[in-house]
Length: 169
Image (tube, rainbow, N blue to C red; front, side, top):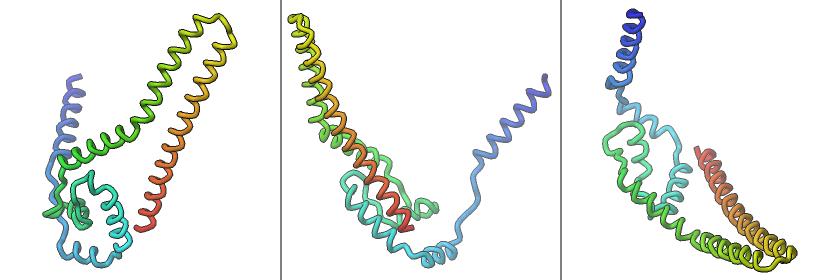
């Protein structure tokens, strides 16, 4: 039992030493320049400029070269975390305000459904109650279809962009 605990302790210490030891691998400057010049990145740069023009107001300004510097651990490759969070929060606020009309429609539909439910109890006619429930269901279904159509077009655009980027690579 004691041997088993010692073995587990040694394994934990060994794992911690491996994972938290600093890496000593460095990129050779000559290799960096050679690879940078041997790869044709014109299509990727063009795609990067399109993306930057589209999301420029949400993300901090970053050049195409900065990505490679960041990935290779070079000097100058800095990531502005505060700017990214600020941009994402601006994007979230914009999306919420863009969808306020849908949220307003849903609230109005809920109020109308509640009023119709009260009217249903006032009138004992089953035809009126089934008609009101059907009407609310049809309106709700049309709102759901509009939302699904919007979501599917956003998904299609995202997939098209990923395919274009992959082809550019």
